[in-house]
Image (cartoon, rainbow, N blue to C red):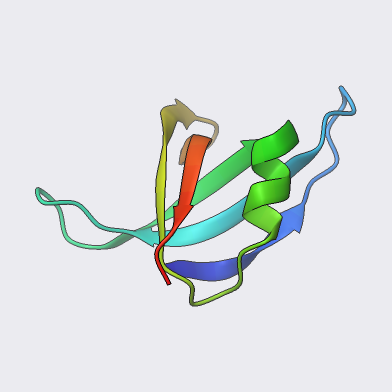
Length: 78
């Protein structure tokens, strides 16, 4: 579930970049906040979602002062 609405971020390369905070859930762990980052087409797809909307996001984890998920695929659940 999105807890902080997607917002654009300026980066040095000039690629479109968007981040949002979700409340991540898994079978092995209780819910926790996680930053989702989208580049290029994924940035546009992430911007189309609103706060409170449920999503399924796949991608790779990165450490940048905290864990974040770099989105490869976004599926809306609501």
